[in-house]
Amino acid sequence: MFWVALRMLTGDRAKYLGIVFGVSFAALLMGQQMAIFCGLMRNTTSQIRDVEGADVWVMDRSVQFVDDVKPMSDNKLLRVRGVEGVAWAVKLYKGLGKAKLADGNYQQVILLGLDYDNKDGAGRVVGQPREDRIVVGRWEDLDQPDAVFLDEFGWRYMFGQEIPFEPGRSLEINNKRANIVGLVKCNPTFQTFPILYTKFASAIQYAPPEPKTLPFILVKSQDGITPEEVCERIEESTGLRAKTNNQFFWMTIDYYLKRTGIPINFGITVTLGFVVGCAIAGQTFYLFTLENLKQFGSLKAMGVSNLRIVGMVMLQALVVGVIGYGLGIGGAAGFGVVFEKFVKTAPSAFYFGWQIPAITAGAVFLIITVSALMSLKKLLFLEAGVVFR
Image 1 (spheres, rainbow, N blue to C red):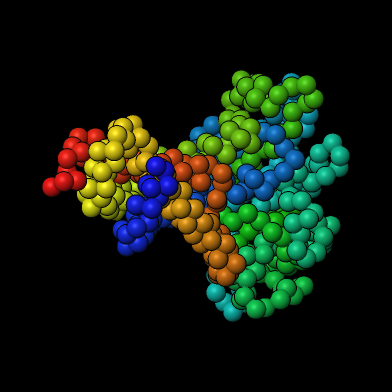
Image 2 (cartoon, rainbow, N blue to C red):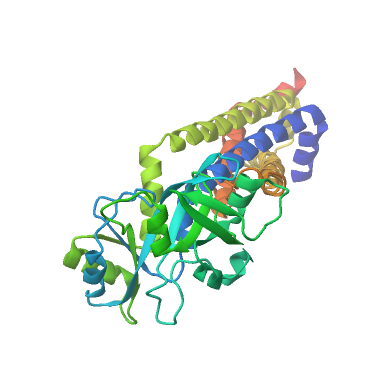
């Protein structure tokens, strides 16, 4: 009987392809939009993921997300170091600066100042990306006067796609010279501003003058003490806000989810894809069933039970769903590959985690289930004598 069901499904190629198209379009739209949404949300946390070596971020109590910079006084660093369970604590500068290019144009940049005076237990500078992410240069080059590292995308954005890296190219930030001594790969940011790495003292010079110059403190917990415990102790002792990397990651995403229209806009598009998929697949499947009433009536006349009829229809829906899902989710993944390979003027905002195919699969299963139920209502009450009319 299942072979008969498949023959009935593919007998009318136009309607068969129409159902597959409806499911494929829904899967493509939902998968692609969810991937872009997740990519944008991940981009808001790029600096949290780029900073390595620390367990805990310490900040002012009123900070709501990673770009909500509220500088603290320098004595906060000593108070954090005095908290029980803290192995070491170092400074991290994060702020915005306005860079003047050689042609006279200005470009907003993200300044990251690393604490070269206080390193971790192994003598490494906390906060800088791994060595394998350096494109040109060495981190030791920051010991040169006015030296900065620029992210790879920032170089292409400010100096052109086809211009190779040239040592000695400089910028002017706050009337102070900044020599670009190397390039580094960074995770794409939400604002798409170029990123400059330099020493903490240099970052203070490049930034606008402020009475307080300590935006963040990076902390490592002692062995045997969890980062969550250290966060609690820091907050109790200092009154500052302390978050683990994972907690700060989700706190930033939560801010954008609640304070921006991004979730609503993408949610509407994903919902539209689901509704369109249901409408196309459901209507086409229903018309397909109406045209095959006599065939189903013949099967009933031969003694085929309603349960077997339900199994045949669900098999047809499952075949259509699997094919449509495969084409749709494959197209969504292909979109991300093409975007990253050919679009060089904008940072990637496409994250295709395993959750996206899983959620899309669930939505497609719901679409084909609804479509099958729409047609089953007619079949279950079908009289066998319809074949003789």
